[in-house]
Amino acid sequence: MTRKRMFVISGALITILSIFGVLHAQLPDQGQTKTQQETVPLRGKSSYTPVVEQDFPDVMQKMSAAKPTIMQRQQNLLNERYDLSDNPATGVTMSRGKPVQGGVRVKLPSGVTWQQLATMSPDQIRDKGIFPKGFLPLPHPNHPEGGMVFPHFHIEEVKQQEGRDLTRFDLDFDIPDPFLPEFPAPIYLTTRPDLGDVSQGKLVTNQNFYELFNGILNPKQLEGLRLLVTPFAQQQFNLTADRRSVKPSMGVTCFDCHANGHTNGATHLVGDIRPQEFRHRIETPTLRGVNNERLFGSQRALKTVEDFTEFEQRAAYFDGDPVIAQKKGVNILDRGSQVHAMAEFEELLDFPPAPKLNVFGKLDPAKATPAELHGQEIFYGKGQCSSCHQPPYYTDNYMHNLQAERFYKAQMINGMMATADGPIKTFPLRGIKDSPPYMHDGRLMTLDDTVEFFNLILGTKLTDQEKKDLTAFLQTL
Image 1 (cartoon, rainbow, N blue to C red):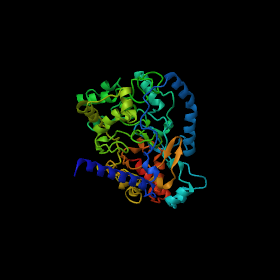
Image 2: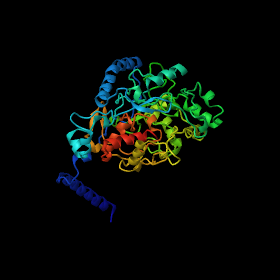
Image 3: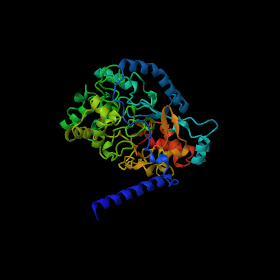
Image 4: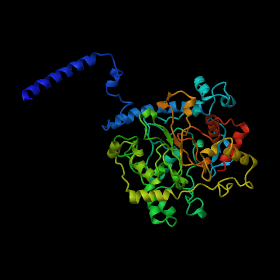
């Protein structure tokens, strides 16, 4: 075949294919719509935070002026959901004596009782719109903005000790003091149980950690504690103009949220969900007993406390945005020395004493009341609590999906989309009375609320007396 003839044949094939292409385009749709052929649109706004700074005085003036309206909106939401009166449970205190708030504080819809709700299916409750609002996910005080927010008592103490100001000009913490952990919280060490509370009633900071712990910790553990009370740049507290503190800030410490290795109730938004309105509020979990845990982060399923420690500094401090982290001064910890030292100290933090429990983590019949013993029976039986919370530390180190969204329709609440939570890790229940509020986002103010929530979600149909006794048992852990 000559070269000229090959060009003629090739040209004819191209012509035929072109005609076929035109004809194919004119044929009826074969299942591929125009929309499917177009570029897939973004599922939400960009995951990235703008890097360009706005004029700081203008931003501060604008956000400061908006603060009263934002905080009033959040306060209205809390008052609509909960009874926030100071009404402690009789004879129940946290480890250092702060009263534990008692009673169910979640408000019911008008004309509905807990007994009626317990007889209804999730579909019926959802369709009637009568799922208690206090059982819905709880938004951040300013959900569209997010960021770390600290209780006023912690802000005041840090300011007094260090001169570092954790006040935000755009918003304040929202949950009232009676529903937060005691402050400062006691510190118990697995290595020195004979000493009891080693904090001596003080908030541990970079001003006093050495005098409090020198001679108790080894040098590596002492170095880990030093890093845990050292401020490092964070999204809202840093040296750039893109901050939420009036003055440039050295940042925050790990113990600004996990105060004394426990929690002060400080809140934030998880960094691993986008867009912004789908991010979950997260209440700071305690670090007590962290050496018994095998999952870290409410949903991230990090496998070691070292992973969690490094992740918090590199990502969670900056909403999971590495570009912003670099700009604001991310502190890259050395994994082999600094992270390891921090984790070694964290793993010394013990649960508070529970004098009514035996070595297996169950009640000693000689020390417990009949109500507490009955509550334990409910915990391991009808209440189904032990399906996830197993002794002695009352966790199974798994993640579970409660599927609470069965009971309500997705809805926007103060800038947050209340929808499915997804799987959440099982938090330990040892020392639980010291760690209000409850659930990963702090939506439940008391243990009584928590019992009522799970009675509805799990469909256990507990009687009023069974609920009271179960709460009594939880208070012994």
